[in-house]
Length: 284
Ligand code: NAD
Image (cartoon, rainbow, N blue to C red; front, side):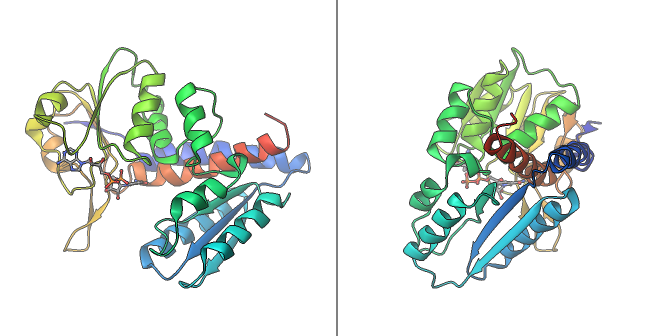
């Protein structure tokens, strides 16, 4: 039976460190703050934004919410981002995605000051990630790295296989594992004989966006399996990209859904907000 990699436990550990850092900064007269922009009424986005606001509150981070109507124009959003870029009392700026289809996400992400880009989506921060010079980290993959570190899972020289090459998860995940000396294979929808790759993985990260996609036969015995996926099943319960019940019997470690990568993403966002405050106050 696999050992469980508990995102609940690791995120609680990380959140405590973040709360301590916020307090230290506050003691020096530095407040830490995050501005969250949400456009339209997408219920899932509203839940995510609410969770981020609650996490800020818990850790002593000031949050500003900008809930804008569905018909907000590109220019209005750009003006708001510019205003937030210039405000000294705002350390982090996050624009909840997806945006309504009439808005151009890429140019809005590019408008956020790289120093305040706590999602680490700006091309400058993506470039810094690949050159190993960045301080802000991509939240979900950084959360996975934190989980591996917490459970003392060695990455150096290991075969690491990532399924999924999105800009948000798969690609930066491969970059972070490479930076820790893993031998990384990045698989995607056009990969031939996927199972041949996954069966060689010492560390397998599933970010494929398909419920219970990774089954027992795809996993090497004693592998570390990290499940990034989140899906709501017909019975209302959540599941991941990994068939947990099957894979648990073959893996050495496995992260569950819920209670795995999910809470790590928000914890990393909070840590990035503190890092942004430190960068802007030149205490890093
Ligand atoms: P995405 O849809 O942007 O990317 C999916 C990737 O999987 C693509 O690169 C695609 O090439 C690959 N893929 C699709 N079918 C495949 C196949 N048959 N074989 C191999 N590769 C295949 O998704 P994403 O944004 O990277 O998210 C992935 C999953 O993670 C989703 O379930 C999403 O909800 C979840 N997610 C969770 C968190 C979190 O905080 N836990 C954060 C972001 C995303």
